[in-house]
Image (tube, rainbow, N blue to C red; front, side, top):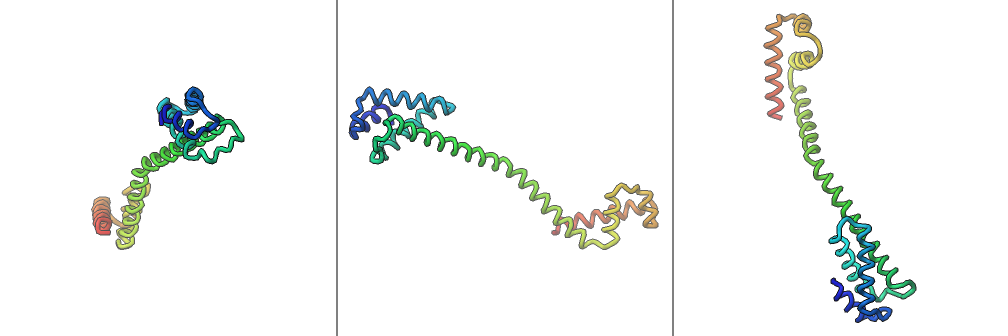
Length: 172
């Protein structure tokens, strides 16, 4: 709604017998009020237009207990609050959308861990022990001594255990 429309609304309703100059002055004061509270002139103009539309739609509720300017400023304050509330929700949605890839990676990691746990359960006790022991800080020489194998035999056994685990994870 532009100034001309606002003027026509005020004249048709006869709210406090507003003159066109009064509507122009109110419009400028509302715009100044909005400009101090929102980031851009365009947003302020949109909010003032929404205020005039809401005032026109709710003109029957104007009881004249406060000045028309006070009533319009109250409507405009609510429009500004609605604007920032909508922006906050939009920012929150954008932040959540930005977090989705990270959440997907976490879910994929969790699924992979579940498949690995299932694969480890299906391995023989020897293969499972070899894999878990190999993943610790124990040296290959110590592992070979614990299992009663040569270093080369241990290396081959760990390699085969890993291959079995990989195949079981893929199949899971």
